[in-house]
Amino acid sequence: MENRIKEYREKNGFSQGKLGDLCNVTRQTINAIENNKYDPSLELAFNLSYVLGLPIEELFVFNYERNEKK
Amino acid sequence: MTTVKKVSLICSLVLITAIGGYGIYEWITKEIINASTLFFLFLGIGFFFQSITWGEMEGKHEGEKDELEKHITLLSSKISYYLLLLLMIIVLVVSERVTAMNDIRNIPLVIVIGLAWITMPITEFVVSKKYR
Image 1 (cartoon, rainbow over the protein chains, first blue to last red):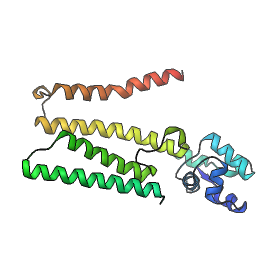
Image 2: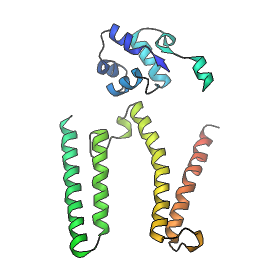
Image 3: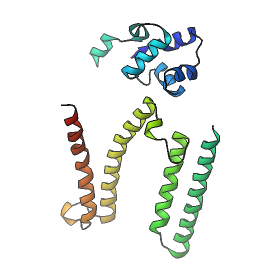
Image 4: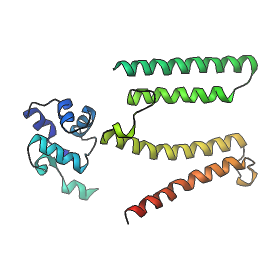
């Protein structure tokens, strides 16, 4: 699943470490999510959308067509 | 790299070098390999990889891990299980030097492989009960 965390994190002036601290995860976790190497849990996804101040569906982009091909 | 990670890496490397060196010395001079030497060598190798991954020799406690770290542990557990099963079969075949099942004399190892084989399905059955 693709996401726009990096874009909105930079808009808010947060470093990966700061965003990780605000969401109670490590910097490495934020980095893995930003690089699409790891899909966060529902709880962390809601936490990220709360901290970055935008709806969850804007933060995470779910590609239905690509999912159907799988 | 943090100081704790550096110290952990150095300690585990010293342990591996010392025990490994002693093991090689014993093997060359006395032509024996002690079980305790092998045990502590494996312990050292375990400490080394824990230090690289988690930054501490004894690893990281479950409660201190965030969700990605828990995901890493979960995925590694499953891979380790199948890898260990495969390694046990290899050890059995190599140590017995036979391929026919009925020629195997090391019954305890066969029992351990059998137990390892059924452990995961039984555990999955018990865990699945929680969600049904």
